[in-house]
Length: 251
Image (cartoon, rainbow, N blue to C red):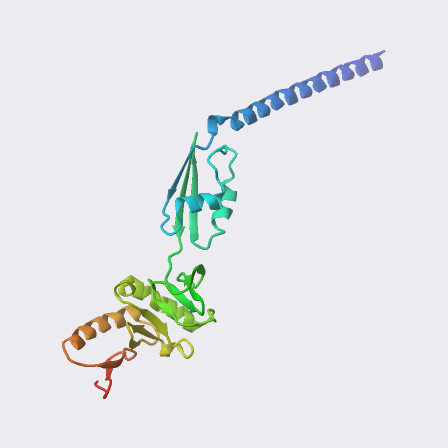
């Protein structure tokens, strides 16, 4: 008799536990379904995208990269996927994305800065300070950056030094003022590095580019006061500058 009563009580408990489990699952299902319906409604519809920090890529180009139409649900929109899509462009160096509920997505980008043009037979490659290709220019167009003359091997000390020199030239505003700026001498040693500014060759060598260009500006002012036709200027020596006129050497 006692055994039957114990079995009955056990069955009753199991039945109650089963009913409670079903009830919990039903409530959870209702909650999840309600939350999904709420999230999928237009309450959190993406209606505004704020883009900051872009200079080279337009807002429309960034929207196309993100593949955002403006009708997505902001809660369900994956920021990780947006990061990956934006970083598919070499122009994008860093990205910050923030959701401002209920309707706004804020995107801040830091773009790679073009530092030089690599000359090719059919045009130029735009590269940043790490030598990464950002874009291509076909044909002969206005050269707005220092040109690194036909050089195919980028993973060398000479090429890295050429990029450093190009960065200093850009920071000094030389490329904007001159008609042409060409960095040459990469087929030898880094000590042979030179730059041609409007046809005038300046032997720069390796390192200390800011100081060398400062000396160059002072020297050019002196040359302008004299009727000298200069073949080249040599800034590779720490304690002297060599100016080679067309006919003779002046030290």
